[in-house]
Image (cartoon, rainbow, N blue to C red; front, side):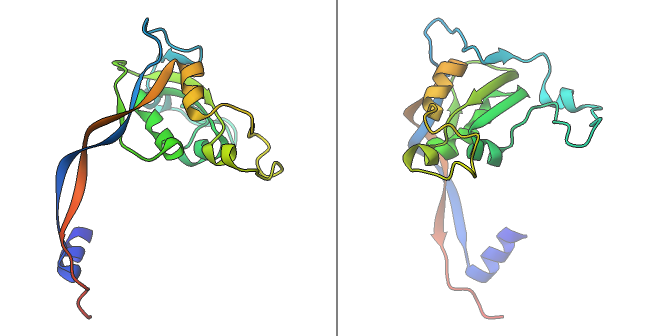
Length: 174
């Protein structure tokens, strides 16, 4: 419906094309393929963990962990169970928005604990009373990935889909 509205009111026409763009490639940090101390293959996927799960008490944590995209970026911590490594792409918000490609060769689901200092807190003073769990001297996301999970982000060029606007006009009056 939104596409139709944009096409009718703004005479918008677009297409997608693939371009070589900067990407973050998630790769193994060690040549021997050894994972970091906080990354382990999961016994079950998050979907399997949630199947039939009912909280026993108010505020009981989700069996998949204590991480949400927004909170992780604000607090700098993830503790998750049964996720694919592709979910680490949420870090691209903190390390620079670009497409994120898992090039580790690791498939399946993993449990991990990752703690880092979000970039915004590394660059400027902040109100410690508002963010008591943030360690201003903690590792960046790059360092934490390598030390805690045995992974690293490499800046590479890669193919990424790009939306190209072919035509647009001022909207028609009602």
